[in-house]
Length: 68
Ligand SMILES: [Zn+2]
Image (tube, rainbow, N blue to C red; front, top):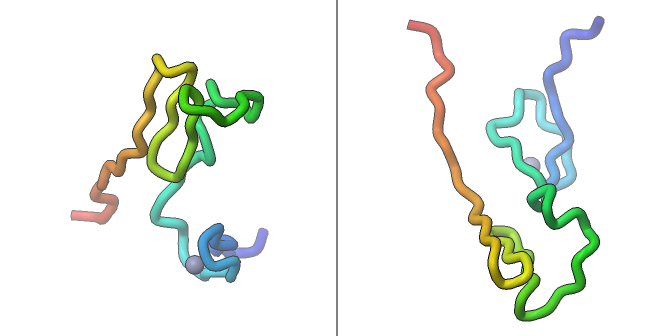
């Protein structure tokens, strides 16, 4: 098994030799690519609104992963 922990970056499209520092989904599972965009159904890189009543915001949780 190769010792390759690299990944292809979704931002720049290049391969980076380290582990990714962030993981995220394009949209909440509730969006599922089925909803037509409208004032009540919105999706962008930071927020998702479904039927004008369910709201999702992208958050960042920093986690220390070093060794003491
Ligand atoms: Zn990159």
